[in-house]
View 1 (tube, helix red, strand yellow):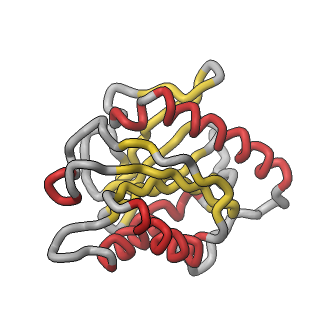
View 2 (cartoon, helix red, strand yellow; view 1 turned 180 degrees about the vertical axis):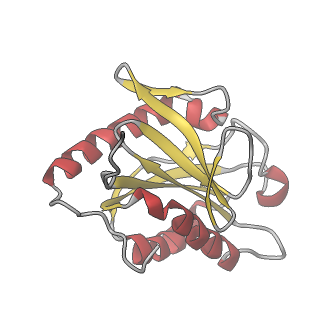
View 3 (tube, one colour; view 1 turned 90 degrees about the vertical axis):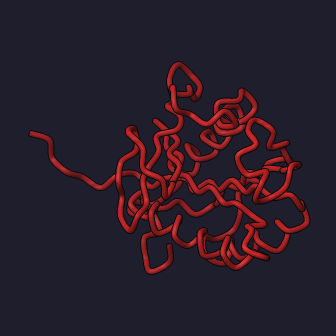
Length: 186
């Protein structure tokens, strides 16, 4: 019989896709007010693996990944996605999003994104939000799965997430028991 126990806290990672890089300077403080200070801010990466957002956001898009210092309870992923959806809505102009926020949680074993879209490999969390197992950590690195989005399967992204994982491992060792944030904030 398995005995239930609380999971380790995880690292909150949010990818932002924008057409105007300067917009992130306004959005990031909103994210920090909800989730605490940034721990890691990636370099800008061209978002050119797909044209999925081009009609809504424009043909030239950029992604930047943000990892937060405060470790979180993995059970809060749906609430985080709902909060980032609200921020996206605040920055919508003329019915078009100006920023797309992809929250995910990173652990030693995996990287999971939150989504409002159901599919065969996604697990329902709550409030219309599903968990998408995006990458698994195996043999010293993150491996993509057949359904992993091309930008997350790219070697540069996987290397970045592996670096964030190393920081997470240090943070986890230093965290007191029960250190995950799971209060009223998302």
